[in-house]
Length: 416
Image (cartoon, rainbow, N blue to C red; front, top):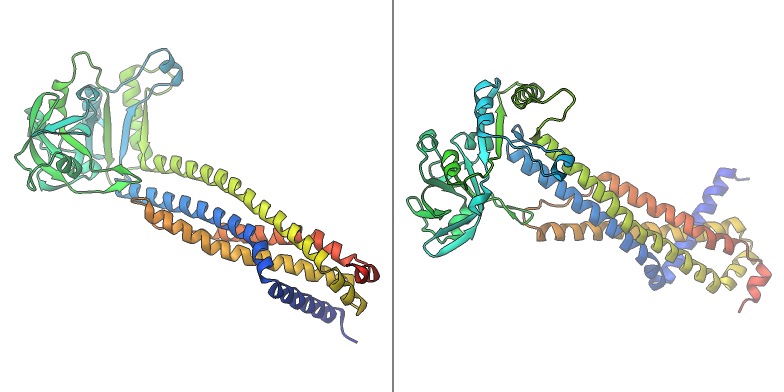
């Protein structure tokens, strides 16, 4: 007499073989049954893979763009903005930080003079660009270096020289010579001589990182519209081994003292670091991934309902077959197992194909989006998708399997 475990294994094997035989005998119907699962899994995997690729690309870009840089910019609470108040940082704040803060290798001030309009002209060509006013330390803080010519010098800023360093896109849009050093461009009605061209950095998700113009900080201040309030951003690079928190504490103490900020009042400024930017972006990516994944997961539920409906039709079509098998001695448990395994195999088969298709779609999207690295499928997404499809196979295959197992042999044989 065989042990119960052996009987169970034999029953599982026989039921699985019968299920696979039924799937092969009805290949087209089986493929249509799995189609909903395939589409659902492919959509989930594609969404997750694209968002993961987007996240890794942004992280890499942040690492390239001075991950240890600290930006101090003005901050105004929402309630103050609503009544027309706006905090700004001044040139004097920049000078105070530069002279009194310890533990930094480089400090630079950056102003974006909106009054100049961002229009640059040269020899009948005009282009819109970002105009940046700064000093010689900018390249050391932001790590922007020249490919041709030179960068701004301390003397340029002190003497308010009308010189500029261009990004490669500006050179192209203005149709400047291949060697543009010595050419002249017009900004706000004033002519500036080109002394350098920066290295190309390419685009990031359609945003051109080479479309900018750098001019001396003091020169652009003199060109700003009279009465235009200045708003300076201060870029700092801490010395090696200096904790970021200690540097921020120094800046906070100094600026709160300069502004006379009372205890308990919010800081009139804020810090921007690569870590903070990365954390903010990661939270956005996670939120979008969860929402998008939940939306496309609805298609998995629809696919599960499709599995159940087609399996119910299969039970009806195979009623006489079930009657014959039961008349030959098959137990209700065997019939239940056969239909349950059939639904489970279809779900897992659809899940595997969906994984491959989803990864393929994600790779195509990553190729189509400029600057995006290859999409990646995290392990948790694979496990979650396959676990979900397995659950769908069990849950939605259970009702047809139970219906088949409860058919009476005589009634099933009489079914036309």
